[in-house]
Length: 246
Image (cartoon, rainbow, N blue to C red):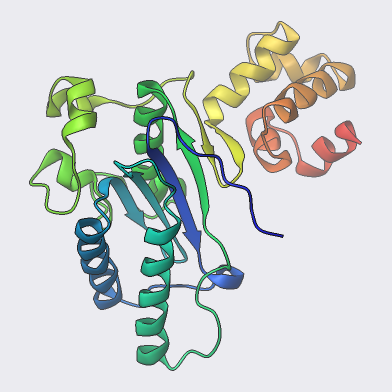
């Protein structure tokens, strides 16, 4: 059955594509440069604006403005197919390179656009690889330096200037859609749990016992927070979270 995609009213999309079975899709910088040059070529041919990007070991995040009333299906098909052919030839890899389908989610507000671009740029930090400032393979350096692939104008206009953009660290109110689930920052996850139980600290919440912890876990699950992240936010074991929810 074909995946039903939601069309964005604004033409902005957050896109994620992953290696099949979590397989690495980039072996070296040559691969990453090939992917970016291909993206630059298709950007022109498909009349797409690249708003943000990050290349990780086994997946890619893109934020695009399709500029036309259409889905990013053709763009991603051409991008994935051409890169996969290159990668298979270079590495003698047999079989699929990418998962069968990419994920895309519409971006409908300025606030969501800012949150999503920030999320994309901070992927290396989440993976504990590098700060976003030091990571080479994202569009962050284009925003604070010289753009070549990325159209930085829309986001920078929302901030007012590069300094405000660079100083931005997100807020507890930022929730963005990613890979089919809600992504909530750890500090926001804790705040949701505390608000749901009327407590001020994780320690105070834990001291109230099983009933309060169950209420907190249910509140976190209702906004898409995983059991693993709930355990991290609450300072308890993942098995404990699982038992509380089941």
